[in-house]
Length: 228
Image 1 (cartoon, one colour):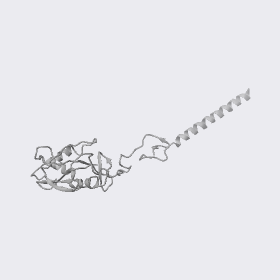
Image 2: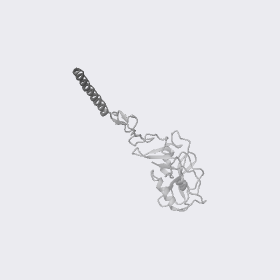
Image 3: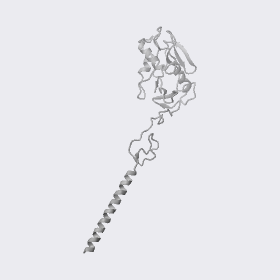
Image 4: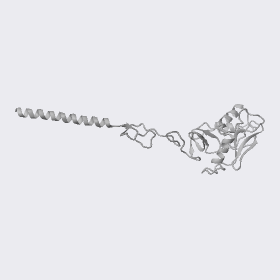
């Protein structure tokens, strides 16, 4: 009888030791788990992670994880055709996928618009605002090219504007008829820029020739652009 009790006691000790060993093994395995993003294409991928925790972060379409533009000139991104990338490699300009319906006068005939004579890349938005803020109208009484561009909405974006002379020329020489992009040929006729030449004329681009100045009362096409 005593021997049986000793055997039972020994068995209980062995069972307890086994349970402690199993518990230690389970705890050790849990401690070895590394929680993190396990998707190798994610920006915050952790090569040492053993368990996903739904925290993976991805770059925006057209950009890498450092915010640099990966799209090429002519690609569609940010609501339009990419036609310019600035020196940082993280910002640029896109042109709307199509012209605004109809034709428009530049407006402000016989008026000098204060500030709208800038031609450089980066000045189109301010030119557009200067024209609209001047409050002048087209010769025929309709909305001006600048107003049409500023009112434009497409691809969920509403921050379009009339390009400056150099912005429009950049568009012409990259994805327009002066370039070799896959969208070459989708730009036709003459398009207004937001750059004023004088009280009578403003700059527009003939998409089979280049930039010339034209009477503000002429009717021309509008291809709005946006910056990002």
